Amino acid sequence: MGGSTQPPVAAPREPAAATITSKLTIRWPIRALILVALLVPIFATAVRIRLFAVINYGRIIHEFDPWFNYRAAEYMVEHGYEEFQAWYDDKVWYPLGRHVGSTTYPGLQLTAYAIHTALHWAQFPVSVKDVCVFIPAAFGGVTSMFVGGLAHEATGSLAAAVAAAGLMAVLPAHLMRSVAGGFDNESIAIAALCCCFYLWARALRTPSSWPAALACGVAYAYMVSAWGGYILVVNVIGIHAAALMLLGRFSTKLWRAYSLWYLLGTPAKVRVAVLVAPQLATRGS
Image 1: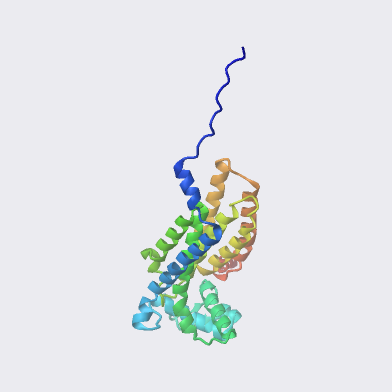
Image 2 (image 1 turned 90 degrees about the vertical axis):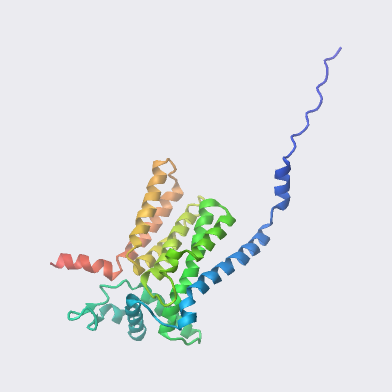
């Protein structure tokens, strides 16, 4: 007689938790709407909390460096960038005076100049002072968004991105350097720094995403023009690239991304007079 037949093996059942999770999965268009609904209030909160001084005391520039930066921005708007680079200010550093072009990171003044020009071109007249007052608060909101983007690149989680953006919006350490009226280099430089790190991570997401390093190089050039803390970007990106190589994770995308970032950022960096002037002075002596 034939052998006994084996009963059919039942297909493994999907765990109940996985079934519930799959049913609760939100489609991308709905997730995008939810993400926007969460990030817009975070951005608004980041800006609103930095406007506290303006709301209570008016549109004023406060602290010492912001006053010089505002005066320099006003000079650039009135005379142009070339005149700004050649400007010798005899009203500061008495009795010697100061050559502004070779002793100032011009990114802050260029930002105010560009925004002021764009607003006037759009038939929205606004004073240079008001532009300088509101730039730190606006860039505070922008910084929160970049931190959220960086968190998403690091974790792949939209929830982590929203949480990171929310925390950055109210982080005291950043608040103190980005309040409205505090027209200082850090108010825009921290946004540029976070933008660099986000775009660097974005360039390494997939084998075909390395062209994002081009935007990272532009953000780095802007960071260099704004603040001496640009050296942090150079070190962190360099250390990260070296660590990936040492861990055996070298890839074509890493090589392309780093090369593109470096080849674009370095020539832009040496165009900043405040960085080049000390070297020229040393050679001349």
